[in-house]
Image (cartoon, rainbow, N blue to C red; front, side, top):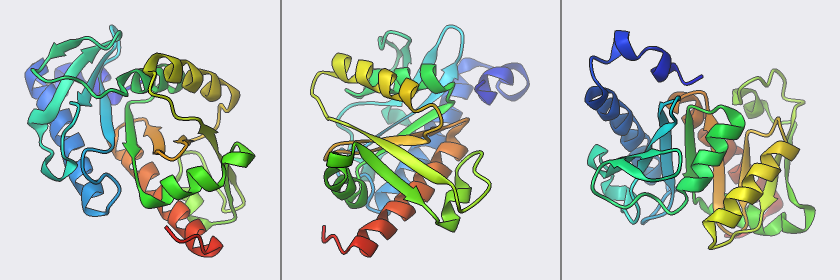
Length: 221
């Protein structure tokens, strides 16, 4: 369950403050990712569960330069993707965020477009995904207790049809119930967490590991 939903009365006097807190938190995360080269230009999108029942997400608006990201660039959408707060158009990939939240019970979903994830999503395409094992940093993923863990990031073919892509994401997540993320081919990484902080940690862990693999494989971006 999203911790924000459970603590609405005690932490947030009203929905407007709660929305502002989440939007600011996501904007700060996005700005940090931009500084590390993981969401250059208008790439990437971020969301957090604003309300669980009925489902509402706080999500980035479309076409925003992540180098100038602020809380005002976030919207509230309902379970069908319709905007219920804000004046911008939501991210084109909002349907993927909604599917991930439903499938994983996630409190936040983060999507990056790093060089490392883009390169590896191309290189590992024939294998259907990327295996990462033997690295101490794997223990930063939720529920992982040992470096001997084998993390499998399934690969999904990219598509401009978000409806079709969302259906594929749902199927892949069902087939790989313990995966902490997935790769879109020649596109980037999706990962999630119980809240924004955990999702951010998962991005940092997986981006570090993918960068390590690129250097190890001597793949030149």
